[in-house]
Amino acid sequence: MRVLYFHQHFSTPQGSAGTRSYEMARALIAEGHEVVMVCGRYAQARTGLDGPYVKGKRRGVVEGIEVIEFDLDYGNHMGLLKRAGVFARYAIGAIEVALRERADVIFATSTPLTAGIPGIVARWLKGSRFVFEVRDLWPELPREMGVIRNPLVLAMLSVLEWASYRSAHRLIGLSPGIVQGIERRGVRPEHIAMVPNGCDLDLFASPAERWRPEGVGEDQLLAVFSGTHGNANGLGAVLDAGAVLQARRRDDIRIVLIGTGGEKDRLKARAKAEGIDTVLFLDPVPKTRLNGLLAGADIGLQVLRNVPAFYYGTSPNKFFDYIASGLPVLNNYPGWLAGLITESGCGYAVPPDDPEAFADALIAASENRAALAQMGRRARALAEARFARAALAQQWVAWVTGAARG
Image (spheres, rainbow, N blue to C red):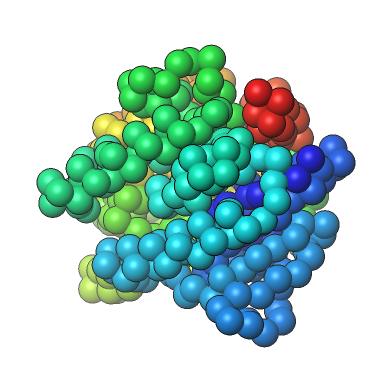
């Protein structure tokens, strides 16, 4: 079976972006299917192609995946209008590929929501079988975050969301809230599967080198946030907690923020201006090196802005990387992940917008290392029992390829 796979931000593990699409494509190939991955350039990604672009794109085979990469520069530093322009250009190029390439199934994954456009067009013009994967609910998230306020733009996004859902023969949601959001748009539950992000148990269990950032002692508690430093992430909460720790003279605790994004410079400037030395900033690294940092850390930070749409509507890669590494997790917003942490006893779930509670949890972790180690063992057990990527990939492959059989 030949699967035409649309993901604008595709990356192999050599990049610092999420690798879900890489893993799922590899799972398809392992089952004997062909995969054509259609993507764009992304500052944090590495597609595996390094040849020249010809007429705006390049093509090659990476670990059995046939990759078509558009010469579209994209990064988290861009403003909303520039991002929208790149999304639109990708959608236009992707439509051409969808109409030209032979495929038994067309699969598209958001974000952005515009990734569904080639699937919509191919469904109605070619009669292609179409599966759409929803990673975030649009326009609910940008509306609640206040990123997009224009009612006309929100209405257009709502129409595109509805068209994507109703054009797809099958859908995938990455969290309970996403599945419920799809159902609210009138899609029957039997057409939706929940396949959350998973844990790469081998990569994070066996790092090539365990390491800590320069200046962090082995006797200090090391808390790590790995991911985008953007508006949605609300990393000001980490600086707030860091200021509390500093006021309490807790030099035994260090927080590392590793990644990039539109808010990083502002966060660094604030930390410098306020003298918050408990928080350190690192540039992003590939997952093949990130696993060594997580192996050297004591606790992972799952941080988001206090936006209700996030509570059940996200499936963050970093959470699954943490538990795959056997790291306890400190989560600072309510929802399904906070429930998982509490039920499994693999970390701390603190209220949002409460820097004192955030700092208290880090202090508790530092002062009771035996309990923290037990939480870490429970985290790894949760990863193995419920979120092993190999098992989730099998479910995903069966659901996607099943669409071709009707």
